[in-house]
Length: 249
Length: 305
Ligand SMILES: Nc1ncnc2c1ncn2[C@@H]1O[C@H](COP(=O)(O)OP(=O)(O)OP(=O)(O)O)[C@@H](O)[C@H]1O
Ligand SMILES: [Mg+2]
Image (cartoon, rainbow over all chains, first blue to last red; front, side, top):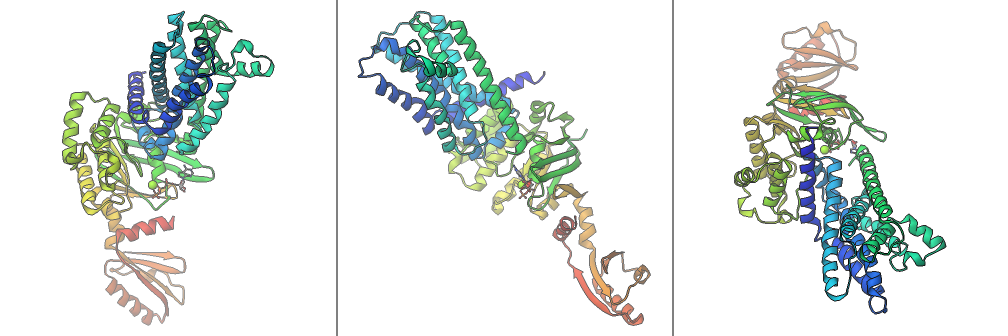
């Protein structure tokens, strides 16, 4: 247990390195910042939708895209640039690398989404009914989405473009089944069943609960699901990466 | 305590056994050369030593610390240059060093002083703020070395640190390794340059097809193959060892249908063999002499196994 401080320091240093190196990479800016903004303009602006009703869902989508766009890039990028082996020979383990990548993704998600929220608050009247829940939604949302991002990078690949394509194949469908464009209360049948399966649904619901006070589930359920999926994603990433390590670099 | 203690290490990739029951000991303070042909398993062994790969069996201890039980503590003792290693191209030389130093938990004040010194020592001071992406191969390798020795590691592990470098860079790298060794670091390195191993290392270990085939000081390995030359001879009749009982023949070994004779005077042995053949009315059917070099020894060891 003498190793705990070493372990935490490793996570911290790796997070710092990721923030410095990967936040400005084109794929991150493209899929993490520009893309959700385009989606916002395409779907919400000019369609005479009630912005206050849809804003929580939009914020959830923004958070989802930003937080999950850093993770898929880092490990494949490092493998391609051959810096991954050196990184592993520092006093870190695969666990510190995974957690460092998750943290970097989460901070990116929080930062950008916070900016968007502040900017929108200047133009649109967006109320926050429950500040505590709002903060919790931000934290749990970025954590689970960043963990998903890292999981998407775990299948052995040293090609960032392939991993980005793969991760978008998973991420895009999620935004259509998670109650972002069609509120959960208006869904039924298969749509609703699918929505129950998407972790993003619970984040959207949590934002609804925090901002407008109207939600489909209890916030406790939302938080519980988000915590569970975060842990699940991280554990799955860990198992996959450990297996890769047995097979070789 | 030994700096590196490896016991019965095994690693398979599918059907390929890259490292097959390797055990070795590196004493504290020595420079240990790990040689072998391409694909012998050197890099795989180094990855197992540095905790980058998980072994199928066996154990590795660095200064007595088991790398798989206490990876972080063990890695704190080490500086590593992996094969085809690169540092971060999108960071400057200085930023790379800072990152490395932070990984080893060096406080800022110590870090800055050490980085200034090391940049000067490796001739990188003028380019310290340039992105490593713009560097030549030799300069990248120097940054890589700097990152590995920033914390004055007790054990320095290098996978082909001089491959592909020009004479100047190579010398600088060798000097740096020498310097680290003088300061008390134990060095474990692989190289394809036998001359380099000969001048740097106190112990040389040769691995072939995942198995260790020889481990000795270069001088002893050299003596075995360098000052002694060998002559291979075969006759048209079977002869016994008695024929070779002469003072000039150091050793005689049957080798298939031939005899291999070791000598330090090839001129004399040729005349002696001709004399013998005439006296015993034997016909010499083949006669070859092998030239002296450590390289030859290496080739021999790695072909025989
Ligand atoms: N990740 C991997 N997957 C499958 N096989 C591998 C892997 N890594 C190494 N090998 C195999 O293991 C054997 C040993 O490889 P290794 O890289 O250790 O050799 P080496 O001694 O470092 O060679 P070189 O001098 O060319 O660097 C080779 O046959 C290689 O093909
Ligand atoms: Mg190699």
